[in-house]
Image (cartoon, rainbow, N blue to C red; front, top):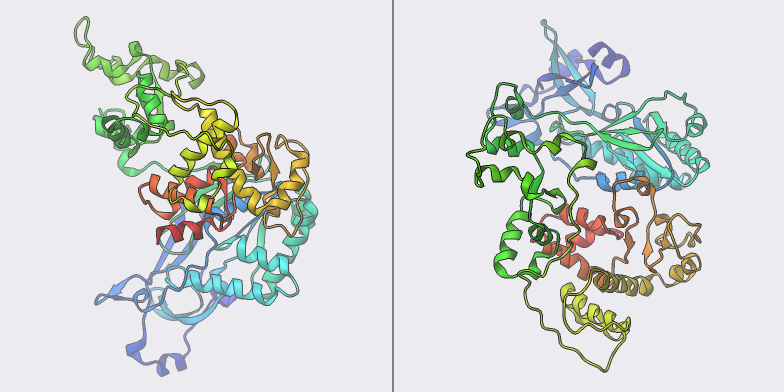
Length: 543
């Protein structure tokens, strides 16, 4: 392999001049480690262990890591799922195309001193250096190839290129330009795989008919890999997992697991109380302090969709407390094996009665009514409101009035709350996307209908927007083909980043997740909204 490195110009034997002129106290020999991927046993990678210490000092400790120049992974993947025609590829041996001559190592039993002439895996500065050179090359070609320069900067994650296009013609043109610009900087794009075979022929590669494994690695030695496989023919993603070593003994045939060990493996929760499930699935702050606190504790370690309903007569937990004919805690009983229906398909499990809300333990809410105003527009001065909750509640009341369905007592229905929330979205959308809304209203309807296309100069042009049956401006993308995502996840509402309502919604998510980390808030908001530069907005909120 070292001989191959010499042929490619990645390394060379140190010359006598290099050995004599270099001060010996400034020489550092890096340990060489061979790493293999269990999924690719035929392929090995050389790692220069720049983290190895001598007298408490390692090579990496003397290097500057550099800025994180990577496009965020969620952004790269969402862009890859945005339009119908998808293409991915990668740069051949990307790090080794960056010229950096500074690292020595010894080879073979009769040591021969070699010098690396390129960036290596293991050095803390390699990822930033490679990204900088890649982006610099793109910026220098931006005048002649603006589309390719933007694609190289925004659609790469380390050496992987993932992009989507509205048509095969556009895909072929941009990919060929990307190949040309990369070649100008000494990078070779290869292993192209599209979901349309004509794209492969258009970029001069043969169809191989295989799936693409997206081992998206940051390029550091931490091995933070997202093991994901893309099947282009069906346009589906699959994930690959490896069982944690500490869980293997638990699953051994002769091992009887304790309750704590079982919880490490089983990630599903059951209750035979429809009331408890209704509490878990609704806003727990609506209930009295005791219930609110207990449900808050439950939601701190689980998600509402992880909770299932089980009939009382099939509840395995009762085997420990509700005895009729003596103890049921037997090795072949339901306490250890669970109810029999778990061995059936999920479609055959007991069907839960539809209980979305409950008034049990509901906290009293007092509402003040005014007769003068019946229009939502009269309370649209959102700048006067500090918190989303207050604006949301007040707007809900006016929405009910506007619909001529005043309800002076009882709990607001889900439809009333949903309508009020959408009314707020539409205020923000009309304020910032007036021309787009005016154009798209002509084809308002289902996302599967034919819709008008907004002007290319519009900031939401690439969101492929449409207005749905309820008058909400939403985004379309290839994620709409999935069977399991909710309507809002498939078609998120588009909100202007600088609008006060958007700021209030972001603040509500920030407080709901107890001032959690940025990615948690961004991920939750992405389930419902499309907001440009959302991370910047959330970061501003956290400051």
